[in-house]
Image 1: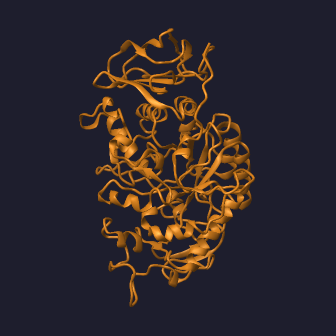
Image 2: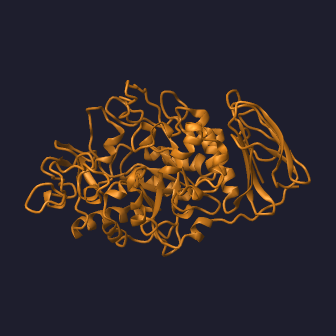
Image 3: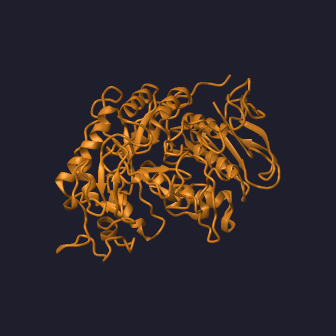
Length: 524
């Protein structure tokens, strides 16, 4: 009989000594999924029918604010990152649908984390109307839907320019003044030091908090002065007591792309302002799994903290995001994405099985790629499945072309469950063959395990005995089965693993080249 283990719930929150990097999952939940460009109605349904029942902590959604409508190229994904006002109508739905989603997801035990864009407004010149009908004129820096005028922006002209470059754009990304005072690729950069601008932003974020939003993925965080962010954060309300304990502060995870010489900027923001989107995690793990430059799985021992990444309790770990799966934001060919499902699944098995950071997984949509001779995808702009007028279509998972829904892949969903069981337990019993066969347990050092993982990234079958540390019994391999103990059932060809009275198990895993799931994961 398998004993019941008391899991150390919320360990990250316990270890964190701060107010903006403590996330707010329901007990026993830990993983965020980015439902990229989903409609509010579809997110609400997913919370109730899939995410809640399968133990997901929360959803990262698109920004709900009014945004520009771009028709050339037609309705790209990045139009969402060009705000027009703080009105709550976007391509994902209107204010009523958004509020309904937040309520229904919270009631299902799934938290909502918003992708917040507060650094800038629309890009370059031109005028038009946003998704709520608010007019704007980028050339004149005029956004009457807020309202903002030219005095509210870091202009590159006038007697006291705040941006030192002649065209107002960032030229040197290693210069903190340019990065924080100049325009990122023509995006109209707000003067966040102004009390008026801070008040407008804080009012917007507080409205979301009041409706039940738990936190924010802060877009372009390193392009804002830390003092400005701190001042805005201090103006924010505590979270809604309908779902959160009184006095709970919002959670922030900050986009700081830092694959170059700007890595030294991270302490300016983390941990005082929130968690760090740790881009190095996914790119380094991708290099190892794809064996780039001779790297091997054996190198993953002490992955994360031992690799010089942001300290575990201040990091948000992920394999890929909406930018770098399209070749944006650095990482290049090192990024694991749904375009190569086999390596992507192996990356999830390791990330969700191992011990590092707060985890976010990506849920994507398909687009027809057009790879140019220089490696650039000419179609990297393409938005979500939409009609001819740019209206996002309802989500229908596993329709191709259409919604990819990686979070529903058996290997990913079931490893989320593994991750929840292992939460709070350390990595123990690490073993490797000095190359690309590894195993590790999650449990108490010198004591029993609550989970065990083997990954074979070699081109030969490995059949051997492993010291799992698990209680004696028969377990289902959750990478193939939807149950963790017999009867083992699921979409895959289920595999049973027998652990003897000493905690050892004979496990055979075929080669990466010809095995659908060249890994095993079992848990109590």
